[in-house]
Length: 334
Image (tube, rainbow, N blue to C red; front, side, top):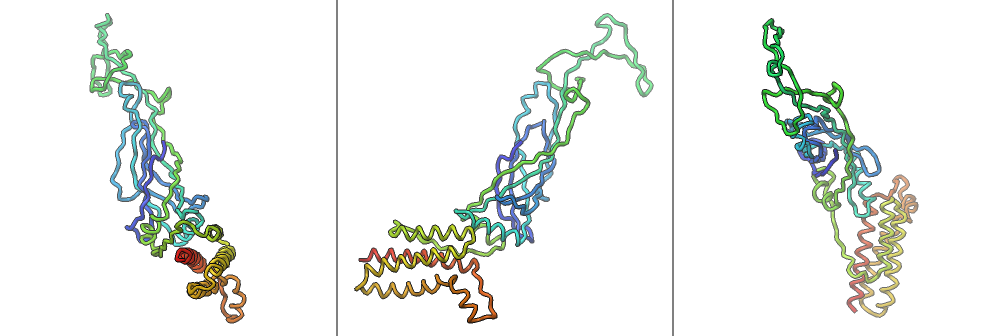
């Protein structure tokens, strides 16, 4: 038994933010009958996010349990159990998911779905029996007193091996539970499946419906990476962002500004282009120095406690990439 496939989607029929998972679980037809699925959802670092349960509006399912030992054994093969399960997610959990997503290099959401599957397991084995009239084998007629007091002619039950038999109303069966009187077992099995939700799907499909808010997505093409060293600093800054090292983010972004100013100033010393550049770099240097001047700002307004948050870090990363792109375009002009 295993989880073959999982298709996650945002679920909109709940007052709380929710994700619905359409799951497919393989099991052996006639030998295993799934009677319930529940479990929990966790992050890739093992933190439990929410419990999951089957969709309450799912249509009732019917499964059949059989016994081995006949030509019908070929029917005991893999079958797919399909169900929908829902995870109700709190605001605190969404914040943690977002934190883990930002720690991923691609910005993807990585989850683990843990399902506890309850099912019936058949242990039954059957053999065909045959009725023989005692007179046919030279015995006297047998009279049997039934439970209702009737005196009836009895038959002898005999067994003969026949691998190709099929059931009918005249057949009699010798049944065993693999050598014991236990024909059925109720079992539980824990199944796990890794889930990855791509960044683009999370931003465009999940975020609005889970009430995280809409994202402001800016695509800044790196092009031919004219100034490779500058993009190298950006990669270091983004790595600092993933580990929430805000000072590292600002420090690498400031290095980008220094590098670009040196390159542009040397190339356009006596060109009108330098005037456009100086305006841009001055504004950038002012923003990039924020993390260095927190104490100065605090002294200006002692009643205020200045902190660097996600908004400030995202802002400096965006304008740093834009500044590199601007510098590369200037270098192409002349």
